[in-house]
Length: 274
Image (tube, rainbow, N blue to C red):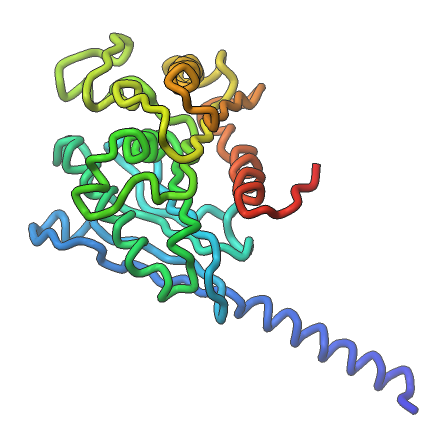
């Protein structure tokens, strides 16, 4: 029979083993090139990181586009998506004004196409891809969802994405796109670079998440509210709109991940705790 000291030693060893297994349960592969473009800026910029659980297959995938007004920012794996038994892909794209928004959106589409073709190598399931991002990243995810030609250029049907979850994305033409057109940030326009221009009733679930309408950037909630209304009028019944009271443009990100996770579980048929 083991004495108390031996029992404690065994317990400590088992605990340490558990910690080691958990610590080694995920891997992150960084700076993976995803482009066929050959110019210097593309070769520098068009890379992604993949964070994935080890030794599993067919895991859900979240493709995350960073914010920064389309002019700044870098790829990231959000802390709130780590250790969730999902694959997370953080994407870089070329930035304004070094390129046009057409080139930025083309980069984003190429990255998502890469995910469809390679994510099984990292344990992900191409049938369970969620496209998301904050601010500029939210705008990008909206555009890829609603204007199907971006992904179609890379042989991907935008409707094969399981769900789109933009965080505080701009629904009218993005203000830094308008800046390049000589239009000030409070002069609203809707052209081919506005998600609202491409409203349609036949796309995958679209989960719109915004901060408090009084605290958000440039009326961002109101734009999303109008987009949600137009989507419903177009016949799209799986458009969801959330306003996170008391949280501004940056503060809404953290609670927004709970909404993303809840919808993901619902899509996968997993019971959601209230």
